[in-house]
Image (tube, rainbow, N blue to C red; front, side):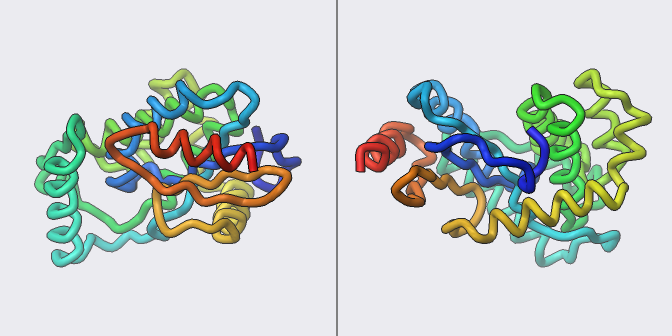
Length: 216
């Protein structure tokens, strides 16, 4: 699929803007799968990373750790079926840094487009269920290897200037879309661009918005 600088997929297209280390993106995954299964076959679907937090080697501030732990607990109450392994906060040294995970998703897309979705899922499960830290290169390389990608090549490319350039190109393109945060859904047709209001519990309202916009 390449990067955002390549020729865009045909219209209409639905763009799912996400960050693999965004807890609300994890909460959205079940209803997103339901929505995907009901979308018209003529609609192209793209994933695009949004880059929640830039590179950092510093441990996460205690206040931010407390805030994220509270968000996890809130999501567990509000979105049935969404679980978190809270051992992450004691087993790992959290860093407010999601760009490495975003690069890993882009790199998986470049090396084998069929592994992009699997990489997102692997990062989410490592972070939220297995208490592993996807801010760490070692975690990302291990996940790539588990998906059948060449670990040495993945490790070398993950820190390459070319991949970083591709990430920032994608982030710049995403920021031109009418999004309010992550996750976001944006429908692009020949007649316009339509932000889709999210529903974390039911795919039907989102499908209805998409169908109305496609007929506009």
